[in-house]
Amino acid sequence: MLTPTLANPIFCAVDTPDLAAARQLARDVTGLVGGLKLGLEFFNAQGPAGVRAVQAEGQPIFLDLKLHDIPNTVAGATRSAAMLGADMLTVHAAGGPAMLMAAVAAAREAARPPKIIAVTVLTSLDAKDLDLLGIGRPVSEQVVRLAVLAQEAGCDGVVCSPAEVSLLRAEVGPDFLLVVPGVRAAGADVGDQKRVATAGAAVKAGADVLVIGRGITAAPDRRAAAQAFFEEVAAARRARAH
Image (cartoon, rainbow, N blue to C red):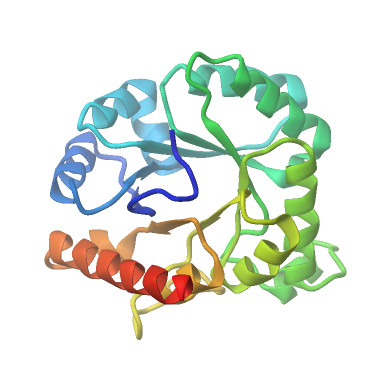
């Protein structure tokens, strides 16, 4: 089971609807990442059978479904997802405390419970977007508010951007998992994400798990890219320890 001291905290995002491509990616990064993140694009195309097929490649699975519905529905979906043997499963913190507690309770019924990770504010959103949604507070304050809500509901951690890691670590303590997407190599295109940082900066700030997609999957040499990210993370961990 995953812990904040995961030997390799990098989860490679498998953002493809194609099963053969997903399995090839899994093979390409074997031994260089700590696991694979399967999201909505893959799951909606391949379903549970696709998850099992990728899982058969032998890597931990982060099932990023971002469940968000009434508590009973999310509890049922969590039970179904737990049967797939995923190590982590995402729900939306904005679903509220009853929904979060229902997900946590359902996960704990499983023989091998997945860690329930609550999504705070998507990395594609900034202050202007929150204003349009009627949320009249800075992004960082909204992230902290939702993270505390998730922690109180019994979740194992949250998804946040690199920009909020140090603030959250001070707020939620050392044992609450901070799962961080929006990780880019220095100078890389940020794409559709607005709150990003390098892998080293995220780790130094206190991130536990890094979700890296295009930085690895779009690289000419995926193994070399994954190795470079791992070395950057290892250096940041050494620096953080001193």
